[in-house]
Image 1 (tube, rainbow, N blue to C red):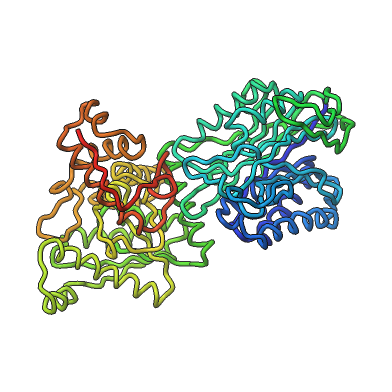
Image 2 (image 1 turned 120 degrees about the vertical axis):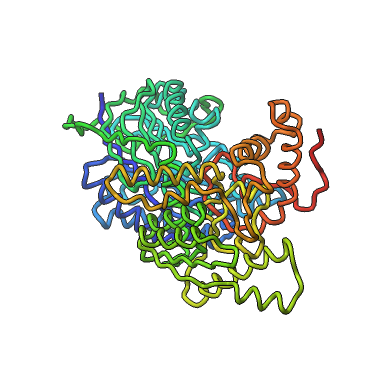
Amino acid sequence: MPQLRLALAQINPTVGDIPGNLDQVLTFSKQAHAEGAHVVAFPEMMLTGYPIEDLALRANFVDASRVAVSDLAKTLVEEGLGDLVVVVGYLDCTDDIPDRLGVPKGAPTNAAAVITGGEIATRYFKHHLPNYGVFDEFRWFVPGNVMQVLQVNGIDIGLVICEDIWQDGPSAACAAAETSLLLVLNGSPYDRNKDDVRHELCARRAREGECTLAYVNMIGGQDDLVFEGDSIVVDKAGDILARAGQFTEELLIVDLDLPAATSPMPDPDDRFGGFKVERTVITANPLSLYEPIAHPEIADRLDDFGEVYEAIGMGLRDYVRKNGFRTVLMGVSGGIDSTLVAVIACDAIGSDNVYGVSNPSKWSSEHSRTDAAELARRTGMHLDTVAIAPMVDTFTQAIEIDGLAAENLQARIRAVIWMALSNQHGHLVLACGNKSELAVGYSTIYGDAVGGFAPLKDVPKTLVWELAKWRNASAAARGEVPPIPEGTITKPPSAELSPGQLDSDSLPPYELLDQIIEEYVAKDRGSREIVADGFDKATVEKVIALIDRAEYKRRQYPPGPKVSGRNFGRDWRVPITNRWREKL
């Protein structure tokens, strides 16, 4: 059988940084060439970053992407890489569709270029444009309608982009065209346990097409999305030949023995699986036999809590780095949420770049103050104390308030302190609320909800505790001091805005609350369905009413990394002004 050495570049592009992304393509192309690769593939929209959202509608941005891919072809030759086949995602457009209502301005396309010998040998435009969940691609792109088959070293390679293998059609067309390898460029965002779904999908498409399948995915954080990589190559039986790590930048290289091309050049009117197929011959003759890589990498999978923790850390690190910050600041109360955020931040960007502020009031417990100090000692983060009692007294002498208004005043005074320190020193303020609190509005708008990024925005309270325990157990397994004080994990949660206050005073137990939130928010189930599953009627009514009323707060909350199947953000689109209420 003919041989092919394939390299998958699992790397971290930055949206809008076309020169920086181009440099990464060159760097990894050089590495692939040095490793003897014949083909190197890069992720979806590599040159522009992904998702680019409405940048796709700006003609200057489209032009810059098209110029970059042409420049790349020339530079590869100048760097002595002219014989390498480089497959790279970028932003293009088509002249076939005139501007009209309902078509994205300029007819932009989510494209892949095949570059070799100083030229763009062919281009592929993504056919299936996802328009569900976090995706809005009908708004940004027009679909392609031609499938591309490349012949390299006498091997036929089908080329598709991401959603094309999640839907029927393009991959089936490649199979009908008798391709030996299906190459898939991806910008596939992370959510919990998606690596299992991804492997099952790739294995199924490989079996259906009776061909090897190679799937390259990007890594990195982009606003509220995280990409974990997990690039993979499976044989035609669906068995794993090579697999990259999660959340790691790397070049995955694998040697493949593949059937020689058998299908003739198609007639222009031929159709395979309903699609027109274009075939581009780059090198028709097989290579002389060479010694393959003995043991291609098959990276171990992270456990469930480990991958969630790494996703949050990567999302935070890239939000900080890609937006030009160096340091972060947060209020540290000694509670579980702010403590976990602080530890994640220390792991992500280094403890010397993490600044905590303790703002005790007259209602703050002694263990909260000592837990905050112990956290700083264990992690090495910076910690300052600014008591708010004198400021609260000044306010209450000027205005007469009590009850909830007085409680919220404390949170808002703290927020003013954090934002003042942010302005003075250039820190990015982190909001420390979790998904459970965000769901039911258990936060103070313009108070603890302030900040530029919210690491736990998509993490339910019960998962917060699990992640804290996991992080401590991981430290203990390595012989390190666990970073989170045990008392922080075990003490009952409280906002400490009034005497003896506990979250359980006004909310169901978090174990129950999170189950109802999952049913109503993630699964779109109504109150009757939830009660029919055995949940208490009064509790369901209360929780759903809280969720419905809190939409105005969620709209003003900072972005945070999506780690679940449905987050509050791109996934959740509910009107603020809305009189619909669930009834039993």
